[in-house]
Image 1 (cartoon, rainbow, N blue to C red):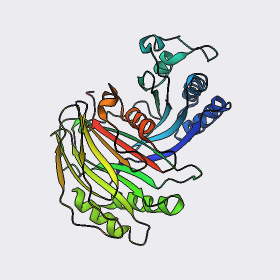
Image 2: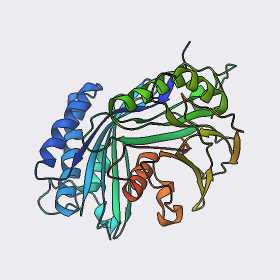
Image 3: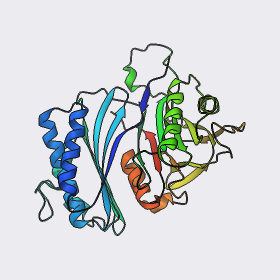
Image 4: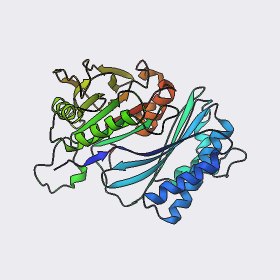
Length: 356
């Protein structure tokens, strides 16, 4: 029996800043909201948030994009409206977040009201460099609390392609062995996270990623090296991929890692990053017998995994305050700072979930 995936890339729409951005954002956001079952009253809130975020980008950003992403967490779906730009940043963030504060020419609702409309709101800004704003709308507002770990990521295909060869997935490392009187969703459980970079670009690279994701779901292995072996067998006959797998146990402060090929996996703690090194090879073609690597993941630690579409030389201390934010915001800011224009990109962020 296949394992249930906790999260994987859902449909993602990237909209560049141009004169038609607000209208396109409103239309695409409403389409995705209806597709995942958000009721019509809430669709109106989604449209307002998307239009305001798009208008702010159009009027004030040096360059940027609006990302509309179906966020999947087990059986639950949400819509992320994520605005990301390369500057100029927000000098007075507290003032910008006051409900009703709005820049000239927008709908007049401002960031504060977007925060009120959304089920989840988060923002990070670096004056002179750029801002990421997240507004998340749940399809089921009474969804259960997901304790233990928080995750989120982004994928973006190379320019000119519709399909992305980079993908990721998260699942529980093992099934729950015993029942408990406690709410099972509140008990922290180890998870397995995979980052896959299908070789090349286009449909064949995307196919390699799809096979990797299905094999990750089907695998009953509980350790990263064993998962890699399952993926290697399944991916024979594809282009192959660089793959990294992490077993994250934030409750006990431990990570276990195995990776093959050119991906980046690192742990950020107190503004410092520690990299976990992969072995040379190609999953699906040549799989070395790598020794699993262990690392500490103490309170406040954040796991970042990404493909080589991002420059791996970004510095954690160059993003003050970022790693306390939500995973999609962390992913967006790193992608903005380190992402290549001419490559597929995949980035996944995991961290310990905040208390209920």
